[in-house]
Each structure stands twice: as structure tokens, then as C-alpha cells.
Length: 272
Image (cartoon, rainbow, N blue to C red):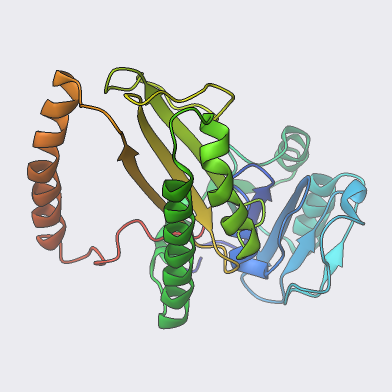
């Protein structure tokens, strides 16, 4: 913030999967419904700014940010605060994809510059402490347990949803809550259609290729992803070629990662 010359930072979050984590990271508040902002002044204490209709949604005692407000129009409240404090430059994390349009319009009326701050914020939280890495590993342990329960449930004749269900049960039981996105890429005759979808009521045949893409967090809010193909029959020629190319591509990725001195060995660790 100091480098960018910011007087304050607005951190936006909503219930859309992956858009809730910045607020959790910056305040400890877990979004259940609607949206919320963390207003972080360069000098002074932060404030959680909720829309009025979210007063009874979410555990307000859990976050470490104790200054909390519920205005009718959050953007107007932030605008008034900025004018009172004579802020000139305010960074915004999530301005293009998360901030409510009505709040953005209110802020445009203030005599200040809104500065997109997604990259800077994401780079700051990409650095993980040892405590955070414990949470990441816990999430990975959860997702692997769920995956193997999915494998145990795999049986031709069951639906895609029935095969997925045991994994989702383990995820929720171990703290993922609503922070999960579990989809499948599937198809017949040893190959899959080129699009992911929500597992549904399609019955699985013995030669179907299933690639469940599992994405979850643990209670700490750190996202991990895991996927492996399942197949009882033979691979199609196209899938076989892809399988043969995969080890070479994986090794190339490892070498590329190792060559970058600024890249953590724990790839794609993030708290969204």
C-alpha cells in the first residue's frame, strides 16, 4: 500500500466460489451469503462493511476485525468515510469482478482515484507462512480421502452423481463447507467429451472415461485441486496418445518450475 501510495484498500468478497477468500484472509469473516467489504486504511483499524440485509447472515463474532457496520448502501458509506478522511487514492481488490455495481457507482462520485489492486494483493498473500502451509496440507489430506472414497464407490451402473457423493460427504464432514467445486469430464468408449459438467444422473458404463475434478478448501480456507481419470475398459487411441504425452509434459513443467528462483515449490497455493 505504501509503495502504491494508497490511503486505504477495499477488499471485496462475495459468496461466489473463489471470490470469498480474500475477505476471510483479511478479516477472518466467512461469507455465507451476499457480499462484504473489508476497508483497510493505511493508518488506523479496518472495518467490515456489510449490506444491511446481511446483518443476520454469518458469524460476526468470529472475525478479528471487530469494527463492523451495516449501511443501506455500502458504497455510499465508504465514500463518506473517504471524504471525511480526505483520502485521495484508494486501492480496490475485486473491482472488476466482485464489487457490486451500485457501490462502484457511489465511489465514482467521490473526489478520489480508485486503483485496481488485484495483482499486488494476490502477490502478497501468495507467500505462505509455516502455519498456512499446515492448512494447505490439511486441505490436501481431505481431498485425497475424498478421492479414495470416490474410487471405492466407482462401479458401472451407478450414476456420475452417486460415484461422486461419498467424496462430497467426506469434504463437508472435514470442514470444506460450501467451499468446493466438484465437476466431471466424462464420455464413452475410453474417451471424454471436451467439457466439464456437474455430475448428474447419467448411468456410467464400463468403458466410460471419468475425470472428476475436485476443488475444495479445509477449514482454513486454502484451495487445493486434485483429479485422476477412472476407467474400467480400454483407452481410445486419442486418450492413449494423451496418456503417453502426459509424463513428458509433467517432467517439462517440473524443470520449468525448478528453473524459477522466485517460485515456491508448493505450486498454486492460494487463499481465494
